[in-house]
Length: 206
Image (cartoon, rainbow, N blue to C red):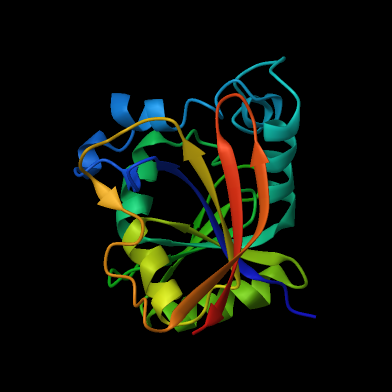
């Protein structure tokens, strides 16, 4: 049986998931948004940041998200930013399909991550990711424009927002341009921790 298609992102209280400029994607504002994840044991282990780290509900959620993911899909802007920031052993450890108009051969990294570049649109990338994932789930890793494209196309089954207690004031809004006439949501889980609130929704046609 094919797995689900989902996304999981951190979002500010005023609805932003990234700064306006891609050059600031790993900057101070983004670090503030993601501050809940950096102390976690699983995050530190996965990025080879050293031993130790916090356990608990946040750590369990990050680990479960990683373990359910059999393949990922991302847009070219996110890949371009990550290519500069990720360590040699990129943190996915699965196939990643990059939606792009640029032709490029597969890029294999240590640790099991191989980036494949897909020039035929979001549905072609998802089809390849489903095949690669087997009975595990496909994660739409981002950025915001790519997530929105899949959401508006009716291709997302569920998503989780880690609602972080910070304000951006400007940037990339997660739901800017969503087709609200066809997307309906159902809240299925809420988990609060001292740093962040995890909200999980299923998606259905309106």
